[in-house]
Length: 296
Image (tube, one colour):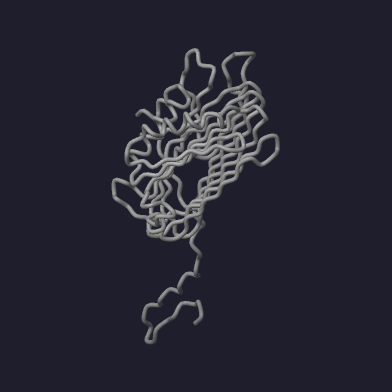
């Protein structure tokens, strides 16, 4: 049919031609970026910001500290969550002798997707004699969420890195099950350019059903990985196992050590006991309290 207006017989009112088809506008996606470089002002001096760049909804805030050598930073997602197609990138460099802790202001929510994947890419480098504690609060996956997450680290031979990540499979308040979701988590850590730790997890499909299998999760809805790559971490295996014995009864946990580092795995049917247990373990392991945002 022609796009011209159609005029009915006997002089009736013409019907306007239909407007040409217009495709739906492209969705607006968030691309949050934070790049941070820190270093001490001198020997045994507090660590300070050397360079900081922020864009998109991702911001980094630094609570006031008194007499602390370790610089504490809090990542803030002003968008309130991560939607399908969003990309969030964090790059952190701790220069020689520096000490830095990074956490998040609250749990990160990964919303449902109608196809596109969300991406989180974290890259850190820790120079000689420096330390980084990477302690974000939990990541919560909604039903039908699709998330690709990557953590990459480059360490000097005597650098120290402590990483803790908690993932919650469904919103506990709604007793939500992940009937269909994707969670892909990839860790790659190098020391002096040599790969020393590689770990990949992929849950795709009916995630709650998959986690119910004994060989996979035994019904767990929350999981945590704590990885310590400090120079003495491997020698503290017995201490780690002793601390794990004090966790809430609902938390299953195990520790192993090899290749100069120590790894902790935790599983729980709900997030509350796992979060409590992970925080208790890390406070004792680090011999200092958790960041204040964890206590609110």
